[in-house]
Length: 177
Ligand SMILES: [Fe+2]
Ligand SMILES: [Fe+2]
Image 1 (cartoon, rainbow, N blue to C red):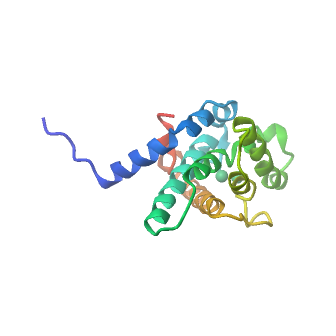
Image 2 (image 1 turned 180 degrees about the vertical axis):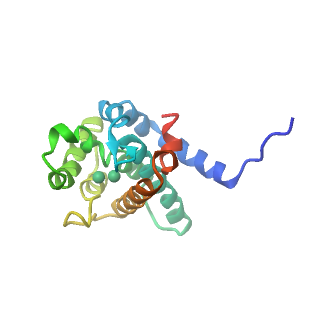
């Protein structure tokens, strides 16, 4: 029997999948936050977990693009920041009174969640998480890792709103996490 040819897309997705399942990724997937993220609705048509995987996968693809262009990006910081950026939105209905409070407070709560998982969280990762809602919040990220997460976040939010859960960028990466 002839086996199906491996496409360039398959290679990309395997590379991203391997990065997501690094030691840091596994710590986040086994956290109490990510467990609840799997069932919490997000952007109307998806879940916090699927959105998170989409943002992380998109961020990693941008990382490889930057690397090809000789732009220095810290991959470990990017993985931690992208996978933690919305952990603070978990439990939004019991935590926040409205969308404005949620918009401003969930990045702060995401930093607290990330520090619970990684007590050694560094400044670049914290900054990327804290400022990912820019320009909805006033202060932009100060490092390239934060710029990448912010762009990936907006792209995924748009894609999920239009295409829904089964076609959102993170869906395929969530299945085996
Ligand atoms: Fe967010
Ligand atoms: Fe997000």
